[in-house]
Length: 357
Image (cartoon, rainbow, N blue to C red; front, side, top):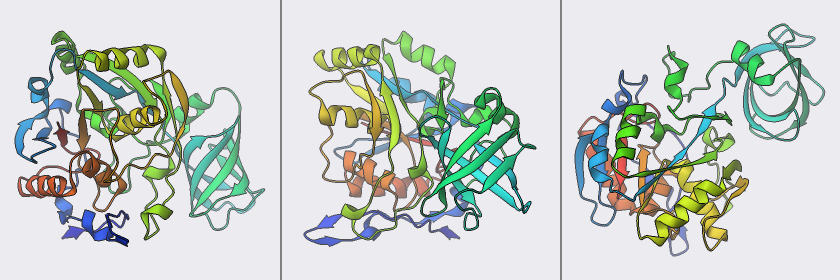
């Protein structure tokens, strides 16, 4: 059985758009449902971004492709246990709320299920009123802005009441929630994990450092865009949802020094890539900065920040397939994906990895 997850992307051919150009057949059996026992025992497909040539390895072998002076850029966001199950006040109807993005104060952008009956002024109760969420604005496609009321510290309430928001294609229950966190996760605020980083162990990171490779950390909190498909035919009409990012002065200085010495900047994941490219698209060099990014990278984009990309295998016809295609070519990426399917690689969040250099 082949999975056909409908997310839209496009390639421009003159004035025409063909969203099918980023599709590929994927047996449903290759969608990884659980993480491997050892993080760095996942498989690694290495691809030359120019020629498209591929080779097959184990993830821990990545160290042989890293050089002294390289800088790995890792996203240190931490996934919140942001899926809550509660009741609508007045009717007792069951409701599920997925917290996505904190706005101002205690206002959050969320997804509700079912959403149709939740109007402005309605209140939801979670954990016998340990968290009460009041609807203050209705958004499209099940989105709402909710004002949270609670005593104490929100993170403690979420740790008590919430569940890890695994992607919808993962049907298995996760025994250890920490396996959906990177070993370097630090900054709470994400609705999904930066999954390319899930392959690293602390021991492997130490080994990489001992080789003379630098580690730089940025933060991008993964939000609404991860959970919604693209719904337009024309890519120019597609609106990427904004996600919050931040880069410290320490990281900016390290990246500028790496670039000045002619060494490589290697992004771990598409979230790191989008953050780095956002900052370099508006600045002459890397600078300490925070803000919201809605950058959409697809073929034709000229990369300004990165020289290599470590990433997982992405959904058919998704914006992330477009991003990795932009870093190489559509043909190279789809050929590599075809090879990965033939070799029974594991796909998506708990799946195997790809290193494009």
